Length: 458
Image (tube, rainbow, N blue to C red; front, top):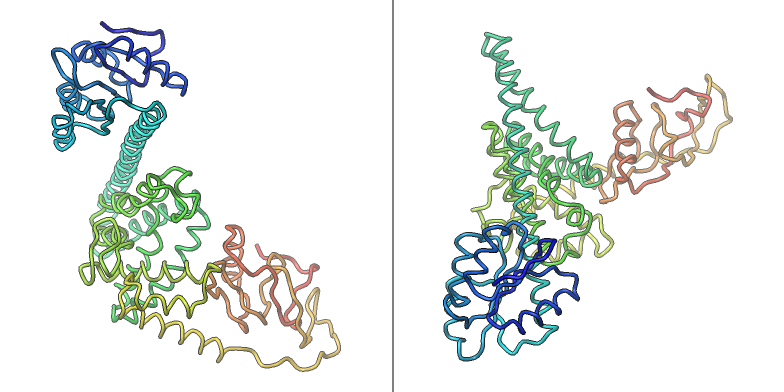
């Protein structure tokens, strides 16, 4: 016999004793849950036949006439595996219930007599488990749909190449542009959803390209590593805000598990394009660790693709130098024994950063002479040796920097002594719009200052 209500519940309770069902209903209803009840396994199956889609949790006694609780759980596992299954059992039934657990028929096992708070918490966790399962399935479906859209886009681009060119060289050029367009779309998607993360990806791409060249890769392969680094976090666009808007270290276990699916999602987004298969594989493995403790496949050592090792190191390094927790030197010391990164690549990173430091010193501007008398050369332009501090938004083309422009991760975007071109100024403005600049004011040589009377760049 089953009891029903006007609104379909989320929990189905099964016990051959009506008093127990009443107690369960009162307990769970006080926690805002909706409850259906059945007094036998067969009655429970009848309810599931009609309402399985609305039931998240099944909680059942073990010892019942006819079909016992373990048999009911087995039937539900076969027909409705998404429902979280909780079994209540006495000590006399413990051995049989334990077998059910070992055979994977149960999600939770509670002994009788049960404590109200413990039972209520168990059901709450079971509901959360069911909701996480449904959400993960939705996200996988979303990733598959995005991959399918990319596949259709790629097919259209290929048809366009075939229709509009008969020369092999022209076809190859068009295909190359098509692949770059796909990458551009992925980058645009990441910039729209997570602009600061997208800015970091660009910095990772620059450093990864330099490390790839130091590792002996040719220019074509190094360029592909840069492309992979540019979109290595694109899988995050398929995850909910609650997961991607907080640092991974602050996430609860279930959310962190969800976060760790983003490399696989990123690979799926590229898998339909044969020419990007290797880039998809590099994205999948950029969170693997040298010691085998990473994810998603726990690869270790040289089993991790070299490009993935390079991207992972560039990402980890820039994240470290962008935080206030430790200095670059302290980070390098900890990495000697941490086991996260390829030791050979850590040496190449040290060489790269030393080379940057030497280059920055070599290009530092000489000490400015004493200020000369201001002599106007034209509207808004003055020939003068002194320097002044200018807000980033007031920079104009033609200015010569006296200070560095630094990103939030600590990377030098422009060095002192560089003159602002339209392209460099646009690059600075993009970082500022996305909140990616640490520098808010920068010194410029007054001799190249464009004042407010001069028109801004287009």
